Amino acid sequence: MSNTFKLEILTPKRQFFSSDVEALTFTSTDGERTILARHAPMISTLGIGELKIKQDGDWKTAFQSEGFVEVRPDEVLVFSQLCEWDNEIDVVHVQKIKDAIEEEARSQQSIYEQKHTAISLTRAMTRLKVANNSKTRL
Image 1 (cartoon, helix red, strand yellow):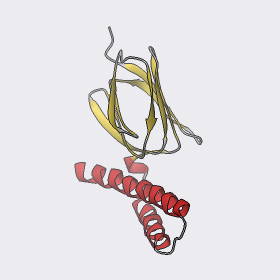
Image 2: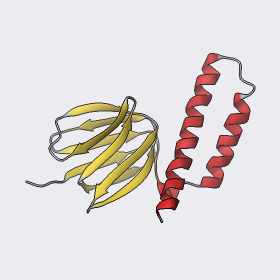
Image 3: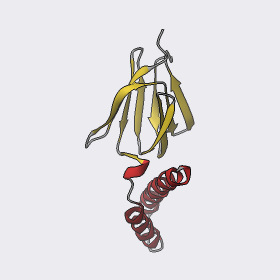
Image 4: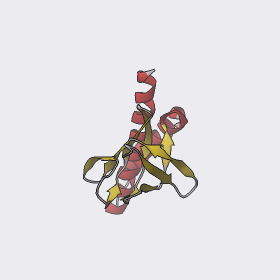
């Protein structure tokens, strides 16, 4: 039996990844989960965080945004609002976004605005973390 499974990751803008892999680790809304070959079928939500793919013995890291994962008997499907490889993240641009979100947070009034800002800030900070972690591994 093979120790790999077919993984497909889709975003609204592109097919982010499609290949056979050994493992998938993702951030769900209630913690980190790892999928290996022959995992039981399941559906899980994606939170904002890191997504790691083990292929040919090496781990690759990406940023993931909200979405869900479907584990099927023959494949795993990931649907995410945004996925970026660590080396695709424009750190300067994301830092500017983070700074603007923090400035906006100082003037907000409604609970809705506060929640939206918290989500946006979490997304920006996680993207920076993923990008910076890849640079420290080099």
